[in-house]
Image 1 (cartoon, helix red, strand yellow):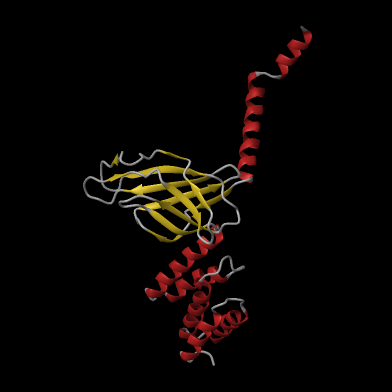
Image 2 (image 1 turned 180 degrees about the vertical axis):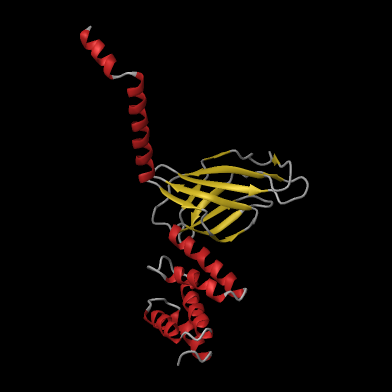
Length: 248
């Protein structure tokens, strides 16, 4: 009896709550430690602009894709997903078929939108994919209005660099050259994440902008960085700069 009383005193309700909370934290940390999580990954090409990928989780057990569709019609609108959906290694032949879906009707059943700009979030589950895959296709195989994403980039740093380049280029087109500089610099900072034209273009615009502002020191600095880089397409941009008379 004494032992029972002592145990009861040690494991009171507050203690048990703390232990359960700690175990939950350890479990969640363990799950996330083994997962790759990509937030708002960019696709090289997609069929439906109103459909976006919110997140992709890749674990040892499954690949989960979280999506959101926004109704762009003033009246009506519907959405459904065919059961024949798969993901594929963009650079290979591996194909992974849909296991299940959450919160999305399977065609011909439909989700009916009630108003314009209403959103529907849903989730697709697939087998685990290799963590070496950096480009992924998401394909709905059907006969009418099928959705697809080609070349989804599974690299968070590279996705951020693409967004930085797009912002810098928008500012450059608006003739806000000085405001564009930090965005182009962000692209070429650190290592090259994936092979892409955004690196050479960022060097190019940094040189062009600084040449226009008369900052020869920066022109020489970024030109040397471009020339010394390991970019496969760097000679294309060097030749363009030479044609412009900026560098000989």
